[in-house]
Amino acid sequence: MKVCVVGSGGREHALAVVLGRTADVVVTPGNAGIPGSTSTPPEEIDADLFVIGPEQPLVDGLADRLRAQGRLVFGPGADGARMEGSKAWMKEVVAAAGVPTARYGDFDDADDAIAFLDTLPGGPDGGYVIKTDGLAAGKGVFVTTDRAAAEADIRDKLAGTAFGDAGRRVVIEERMVGPELSVLAVCDGKRAVALAPAQDFKRVGDGDTGPNTGGMGCYSPVPAVDDALVQDVLDRFVQPTLDELDRRGIDYRGTLYAGLMLTAEGPKLVEYNARFGDPEAQVVLPRLTSDLAQLLAEAAAGELRSEPTSSDEACVAVACAAEGYPASPRTGDVIEGLDEVRDLDGVEVLFAGVAAGEAPDTLVTAGGRVLYVCGTGPTIAGARTRAYEGVARISWPGMHCRSDIAAAPTT
Ligand code: AMP
Image 1: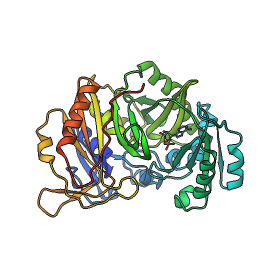
Image 2 (image 1 turned 120 degrees about the vertical axis):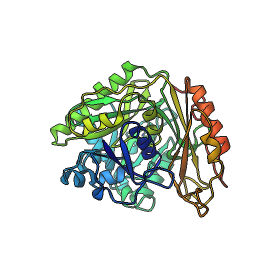
Image 3 (image 1 turned 90 degrees about the vertical axis):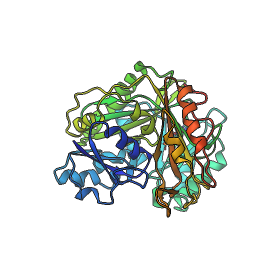
């Protein structure tokens, strides 16, 4: 089978590596660190299966365009990708499906939005969450217990100054408290199967400090998340959502990524994404012992038959970011030490924001999250040690990463 992966980050590198176990893989546009990368656009590539990685092309209807050419595509059409492209619409679908989630309202008027804050519980156990309706690269969510800060954020977003048009509508939610969990479900339009759970680290600094990022690291499995909890997520979250989408005429073939919070009242949905998580894919996919190409081809054809299986080994990914990330990453710094990492057992580097350097066989930074060092081992602690052994060998001016990824699993 020939598979075309669309995208250019660490998630797409992980997809290419794992699909490459059983298929020939080409990645478009990929990046200078992903073998098999090509600048040929997906519409001009001949492949048996297309796997679309990032949310933006899904929201823009790439899956629809490829399906119109008769291609087999894993990834929802623009209708289903609205689950990620519009948080207000997603909340409406989820409410109709009866999925447990935070109470919310959606607004394009600042006074109405601010009045809604009064209906939410304040204080240290309460608080406010302000989200851009549209896509904001994982950075459009503001969580606070400070009422004045919530008001200021609402005004910034609705004025279009903070996130442009993506912020001209906001979703306001009550603040939930609890550890977070991501479950990646592979859907064929009617039913879904779950991949192994993972937990990611969103804030830039150790101890969950500093601004939110696209994700600074991740690990899988999550010790306290057993099969029963994953099945519960499928039964009470993913399946009712797929049924609701089906009722609306949406044939959702792709990943439905459920971001959940394990609150005192039980699991609640934080968000849905329409694609594999990044960096969740980097720790979940390498653990698969079943055939990923086969699974995604079945889902794309609307006839899931196989059940994914995962190894008992743990995987930990640490994102190494460029100077200035997340605000304004610096590019063009030469990455050193990659050869030394290649010799380490149980360590793999997955590339994201990189470009070819001037000297042959060198890479330079070309984005915020530059690369992920992934360690695999019999335990989370062992996988973590390996990942950080790899990190210690890599450097460029201003490189930073968190030192506490998977240090203390929280669930
Ligand atoms: P989202 O893009 O919706 O996943 O939000 C990004 C992050 O913001 C989540 O992973 C949570 O850490 C946090 N968050 C979002 N919604 C809530 C909420 N209702 N209560 C508490 N934290 C939230």
